[in-house]
Length: 68
Length: 169
Length: 381
Image (cartoon, rainbow over all chains, first blue to last red; front, top):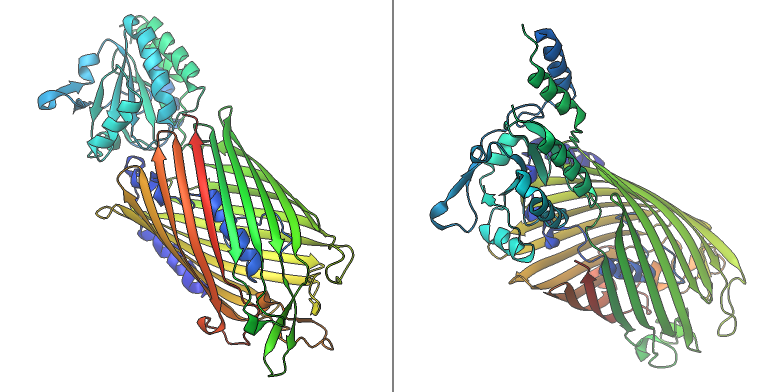
């Protein structure tokens, strides 16, 4: 699993034709951001972490909660 | 004397990135592009502005810092235009309507031309958006301005005024 | 050769003027942004068939979020996020065996009423190839207090196609369970959580990006649920998470596909898969409709059992450590007008043991809920 991931990353880095700075218009779109709505993601992550056994994944851990 | 300025040019080149395109101290690559919203694809060229200090600004509707640069550049153009300063803005949006929409929000009085093919920014070797080139009266690139922060207007204005003060050759 | 004063003057001037040849300027936001959200979270009643004592109301939460993001000087930005939650309801106390052999939940009798406040402050510095941020979070409620700090940074490659990021964080949580409703497992205790994360994001084409991340979390201290009758967990927990994400824009429908996956594993025996899918559909220039789907499947902790064996070293009957699958389906809508944006979200979350890929005993306390949120954003252009 780990090896496949590394391979994929390497393949990507070498195979990707450079997208020039003036060609980055589409990537600047709101819907092409990793998290367009930060408050929504933060709320979802918090609910999921307090009602399930898994947490984290992207970015640093946030504040705690008195999960019941 | 030949050695003296040859050495200086050498040093200058070393300080610059290896990228091709427009470099400080070199003539600005030619630009002749259609004006935005002008009838029958009327063109404007950089050569036609020879004798003025020109700020060649590569911009796009999706470039965030352009929302800061446009009002500041417009202000500079109004103030320093009569002294022989001009701005030539080159839009690189893939869709012209995106550029027009941006200009509705942030209108400017200086000429805006368009190159949606990527040829002109490619010739200039642009490394990021936005990028501006300050070109002197002889058509030589004197400054490459990468990105745009809120206080950049001050530094740019100082550079333009200094170039305006230079006696033409 | 004659001295050419004009040429010399030209050369000297060229060297005097600064030539900032930065590769890719990472910049703070141009304008101040303000945002707020109001959310309602309502758990389904636990069915009478699953509890001792008939239908039982579970948790309801009213939450309000506030967000402020402001550029400071040329290279800095500050973000302040505040969250208020008003919680009320009953919680599973323990699981017992009914006469017909099925495990059933006993809910905490009295209704818990609590308010949580969380304040988060982040300062971020932008340099030409990336940015770095420092974040402090303080969370406070009647029975729980948390203080956390995090440091993160990201760095772009020379061609701007790859971004490397990393983050580390640590928190200290103080637990003071409210006395009265149920006997608690502790009167006062604490726990520490530390985590580290690394990620890489790559531009694949003009329309697509991909990212990978690896996270490690270490928990240490009182990890037992203080309000559960039969609950004793190890005082250490090591977690790993591997994640991947993909975004692609499609010109003809004018929409973007979001796909994210996370695999989670820890030393308590819990493993999970999470898949998130969303389609961001543009309707004209002002409206966005975003249907989304989430699939989640977790395996049970080693020491989980519906009828907890209190003879064992560790035991828990908490459904959150049981094996189950969960599906979320929802819709988000966003409308932009001038400098304002209005948004609304509705989502439904349902769990079932048979939906998961791991096998285990189904907990009678599995929950389902509805969540609605309304939001308002403003950019000071």
